[in-house]
Amino acid sequence: MNLEDLKKEYIRIKTPADSGWTGLEPKLTLQNTNFAPILTKSLTTSLMLLLVLSAVVGTAQAAKPASVLYPVKILSQDIYAKVTGNYEIKIKKRTQDVVDSQNSEKELEKATQEYIETISETKEEAIKKGNQEQFREILENQEEKLKQAEPQNPQAQEKLQEVIDQTQKAKGEVQGQKDDTQNNSQNENRQNHIPQNNPGRGNNR
Amino acid sequence: MDDLANLITRAQKGDHEAFGQIYGIFYGRIFRYCKFNTYQEEIAQDICQETFLKAWAKLPLFSQKGGSFQAYLFKIARNLIIDLSRKHKEEQLQKHQEIASAEDLEEKVEKRENIAKVQKALSQLEELDRQIIILNYFEDMTGREVAKIVGIREGNLRVKTHRALKKLKEILQTI
Image (cartoon, rainbow over all chains, first blue to last red; front, side):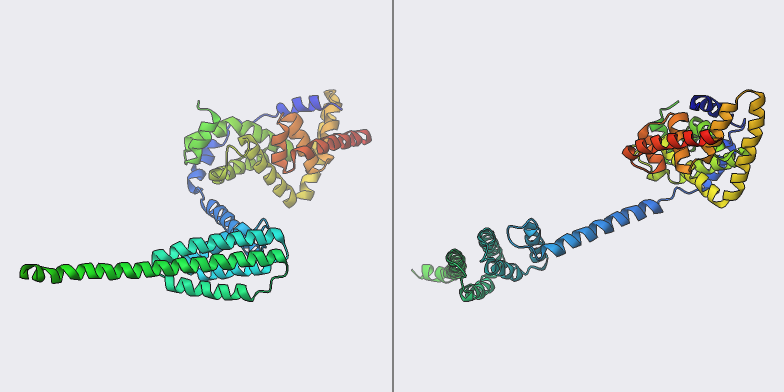
């Protein structure tokens, strides 16, 4: 077989004298640079990403603590709470995670940790927004739920107690904060009122 | 003359002159490739022009990081040749045979039987095998480029090349 000889024949193929560029160039101006495919490509990619993301987030909602997708679940619920301003659902979910994780030491550990962190974060937010009363009520409901959960083993009992203690502590802190805020505003009012009344008194003296 | 990468960037922005220079660089090779595959000068010329028009239209989508420009052009040309052969499958086959026979006679006179035989055998190969041999051995392209043009993996290409050569040898024995 002589491919080399055939290659020589191939290379010997002559090109026409007129390359045809002069005839082709005017057609290029008619041929609009089409950006539609680029747009289609970007849209398709974005849509695919969105679908994948939705699927991951959707699957993550069933993720148990200590599983790979659990942080995705936490993140998606954090975003939801931030966007809607409703952190009650976040606390409720963490409570449920603690209750449901009693049979696995690792999951229970993670769920407890997440619960405590969530309480701490939402407490700050509630104080910032002045929603202490609402927050306290949410905690009260969760405390009730945790107390009703029947511990399935000694370790679960210990963890449930730890979570209840933290809930009560947060409740107390919020209550204290609320009292402090109320006292401060009362003091401010008093201080604001005294100078208005005092000038008269001072002058009288 | 500017380097190819620069010409492509300019052409992607709509610069006709830059595209004209690109045309000048590749026209000969694309024409030769089309002619060898279609056996007809006029058809080869048409496909060649169509190749550059398509290349121009899709140029904004071409990424220099994604592969070589010659692979991009040859891929368009190959697809156009496939489309054409689908449309005129029977007609083309007949013409191939006529040309091969005519060349047989001519080459006997010129004592080039061997070339005619190989050419005939090559035309009897499946389209993919034929393109692999043409691009690999006649166009001296890299495995990566050939793989990109024919749309298979580089690793798979080695196996396919080996098989294509084996088939060619078998066909040659029967001619």
